[in-house]
Image 1 (cartoon, rainbow, N blue to C red):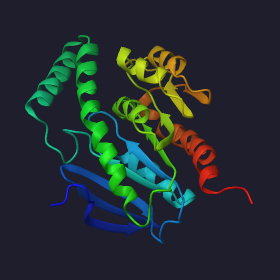
Image 2 (cartoon, helix red, strand yellow; image 1 turned 135 degrees about the vertical axis):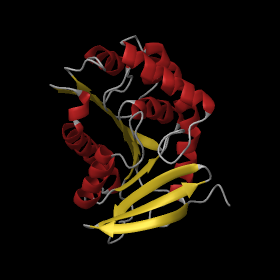
Image 3 (cartoon, helix red, strand yellow; image 1 turned 180 degrees about the horizontal axis):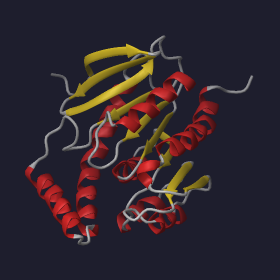
Length: 258
């Protein structure tokens, strides 16, 4: 098998959205695109799922379908290492077991989350870069399509590390995340337009990490949105904000004024 070429393994189509499962070596992913065919130059959005979720998490799929049908975007999502269709290795399982044990005992999970998410991001960044290479080789996407990234929790950790390493990504939208020093350092290197959304009333992911991350971000074009609730309930709120953000920063590249 050619590990540099996307292999589509399944395809479904409904309500104007073409959904294609794919593999790229050990990477498992899904591509959402208009059933009628992609328009040349329209944006490609990379979607990072939350920790413990996968490329077909309900909120991710709903958001992708909306952006395809209402905007004509193409959306790509891949499983993070040890998530979705990708089996965990022994070390990942140890981290997951430690998280479950700490949560059950009401003990701090901070360091476990930091270590686990850092390891996942280090492995996921080159996988996303390989995925971008392979997607750009597809005739319906091409090398000229503007690229954006959106994610929440684990998807933010991976996305921040990815966006500072990958110049092809020109706009990023991030949801709530448990912050730590390596993430703040990445934010200090981030200069592309960026949109942050945080949950104001969340016991698990407090507001302060999101505020610190926003403050650390070096971009001159950044916005912060606050949801008055918990992060599990803000999918629609965040999707609407991020859609407007990508319309502004990606569609204007794809569709120059006449």
